[in-house]
Length: 579
Image (cartoon, rainbow, N blue to C red; front, top):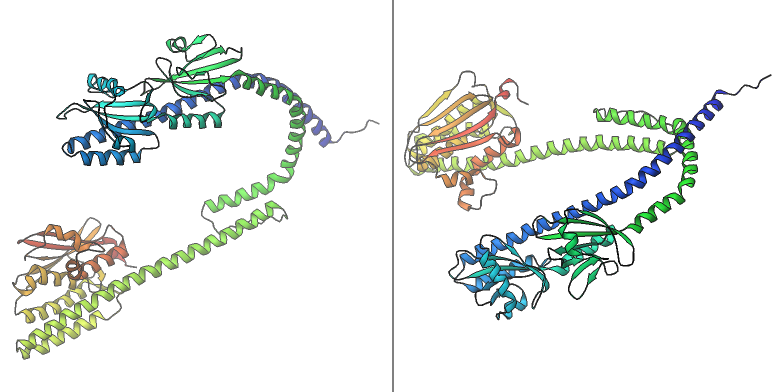
């Protein structure tokens, strides 16, 4: 009887044969593709590095241009004060000393005003500056960049020079670049990226770069060549990539890129042996990786299907529900391994997040209430002080018959003011409180401050803060009408405008100067007098913003000697139900 092969075993052999044939075919194609791509990617990666280096120097070129323009502006502003110019040159040099050897002015006699320590001490004329000054003089609208040369004060350097237009006497601004610092940067790239970079001029001079062992640097004239190919031949052609050989016969790939700002070229020399070594190692491990990859892929396929997929799917489902906002999601994974630990840790994290959110909400609410209480506690003593002053004036003037009226109004004010500060009241209640307050002030100053109410229909029941209007009316009397020195009407106007309810107090007194309006409502004014006088308005402003957001609060509009409007802005939705 023919022995039956189980379905799992059949599937194993089918999958094994399929995977093996696929791996062999793909490996062969991959090897050929990788062989080609290593070379292409190496060139592409090198070009990217060259682009980055070019961008780096483009940014530095802009920085150096900025330095030149800064010096130009400074010199023109202080042309008659050399000491100030020296100080500013020194400060600019110290700020940019990482990549700048010196910043200085070249005079027509080739003497200088310099920023570095040696050039601040010694400013004698030097013949090496004559080509720089002449070049700047011939190119007065542009910045001239010199070839590298040996400077007495800056060493091996390149100078960017610009003629100072508009000066009373011929003068040029110069910046010596620190080529040692630039070379250090290139050496870091060479070491990190295993590359061999250098900067060369149009004449083939090496500005900076090339490692000590690989670089084709001729230390006598700072020029370079590769094998029988000279720098002129490399720079004259339009090609950017070359396959060359050194004098020792070693194949190299040379890439070049002209720089955008400087008239220089970035050169990269890559040894072909590095690519061959990589391919050789790839061949050595090819069959070992093929066998190991086959076994590993079979094992992982079976293991993942049975052991990993289910717990990961459960965790993914749980995280998806949390992402949708269900922070109390519970999907249990009963495993005594990392998946079980991860599931339990995720559950604990969710509990902590829920607790933190709850605590944060309680903390914010408590902080908000405490701030409002502090603001309110500042308002009541302020109003009580002024009201008691009214009683004192009545008695001093001998108007005893008005004392009962003042005390009655004061009792009403106190009964109104000592209630819960966080409780909202209707606009109608606030108007009655203001009426008592006006009555006291009329007796106190022996004036007739006429209270005019212009309330839009339906807004008498609009909920507002307790003690909202009294500080605004007080401001009109004390500052608008000179503390009772003059009298006039005080209008309280309430109306809707879009989604906002505006309650404004208008007087026709002295007004508020424009420079003081902003300081009245700022949180911490530096002016002690303004701080003392604006406590009422500032606290009302703060209470509204704390409750309803920074788009609401007080606005002050004043035309001196004509009219002053102090507006309180509330969201209109409060009328339908205030929380």
